[in-house]
Amino acid sequence: MNPEEAAQIPRRTTRSLASSSASTSNNASSAKVNSLEPLTINDLLVGGDPISLDELFSNFPGRSSQILEIVSLLGPLNTPMLPLFVYGGASTGKTSIILQLFRHLNRPLVYSSCRTSYNQRILFESILNQLHLHRKSSANGYSNAKRCERPSDFINFLREALTDAINNLKEKSAKLISGKTMAQGGIGNMIYLVFDNFQLVREWDKSSTLLPFLFNLYDLLKIPEVGLIFISNTSPDTFYSSNMGYVEPIPVYFPDYTDADIRKILSRNQADSKLYSSFLDVALRSFFRVTRQVDELSTAFKPLYEKYCEPLSDKRVFPNGDKDKDMKRKLFSHINPHITSSLNEIFKVSSHPSVEVENSKEANLKVNQRKLERREEIAKLDFHMSTSAKYLLISAFLASRNPATLDASLFDSKGGSHNRKRKRKPSEKVPERKESLEEELLMKGPGSFPLERLLAIFQCIVSVAEDSSDEDKQSGELMSDVLLQLSSLCNAKFIFKGRSCPIEGSVRYRSTVSEDLALKVARSLKFPLSSYLYKRT
Image 1 (cartoon, rainbow, N blue to C red):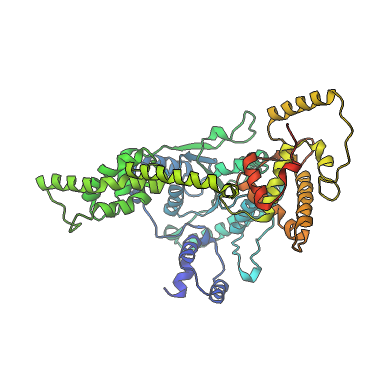
Image 2 (cartoon, helix red, strand yellow):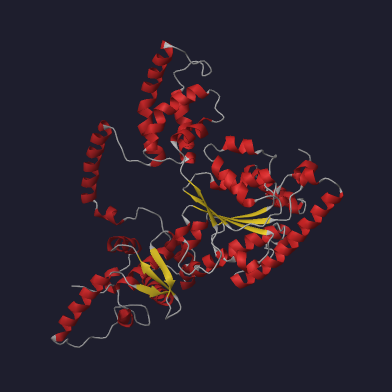
């Protein structure tokens, strides 16, 4: 491919090619980025050769009604439209059909996935980068076209970028009309904003304000040349409230594929459709009990089909008549033992042959004996965790289990609990109060705590570890990445991050680990967790 042809390929095609053929040299890759041509309005088109409507129907069996419905809702060229809400289960063809429809219609769109753009700022900046025809590179320091974090700034930047892009499209359309080439390459004046994996926005911070804002873009922009399309795995009812205050998008439902549709999709591009159909007769029913997603089935069937064809000397020749039945029985007996193992391997279904079960029982008895003899192995963690993450996990556990009023008595200025003053002899009413407090804590479960309290406890127990350690360590080594480790622990579900408290105005956290796991982590650090844990005896 010469440089002129490479420059004409739309952006979405060149991105996929670049990801599949990455350069092994950093200097070569940076030189390639710097040599790229500036982006044009044509880069907002879906790449690839033109595709007809009949090809769409054949590529997506069972989706002709959805394709025709979306085409009618999009309307002819330069027709304003109401927002669309395309929804259905996973692997039902929603995203692929939308992208291929725009490839068929040859209209510009700005595609943003809420999976890769995983927060509000990245989503805003991704949309603005595409509208401004901005490509991150070493020349611009891999910066964005606009830095945008607030919805109020985004709506102003978006209106400005859309106005420039629409004017660019109108100028191009005028040139095509004047040159009498409108029938060859007219792309119209409309720009469509596509939000994929939209259900993930509900898990973001400030989603309660972000969701109404995105649904309300149609009314806020008031630009007839802009279309909005939301793609989600969940129904619209999971987003809408009683007082919406915005134009409700038009829903387009993608149902699950039927058995016949899945057979047609899996049988496409097969050299021998008859042989593959006989394979599906054997394998498809067992896999339907686990999943009906086309991507998972195609991944699981590829090695199984090769195993199915092993008894055949020539895959292109399949016997007919009585020999056909005999060969099918032979192929079935050959593939049947591999189906269960494939289900276990692909979908992690726990199932073992009887011989393996007996062997596993004997192995478990030996392991139990070893565990009884070597108790130290019980305290070992089954996963790797950095030292700062372990201390942070213990800090969160203490903050959730201990009352906040006892922090001053549990941790002194030096971070230790062994220098406490001698307490006065408790009165007779103290044990009763203590028992009531214990019952109350037990009923409530792990409590929540702010970030400030977590960091204070973390600094105290880290200072204890440094005082008791023989090595020369500085507190900055453990405190430097504490916020990064906190984010990792929240993503791993060791710590639950709640919403901001309306009274305090700060985000609250809660430890989700059990006491056994906390003791294991403490033993790995040789940290005296019991000395800092509120006694319930």
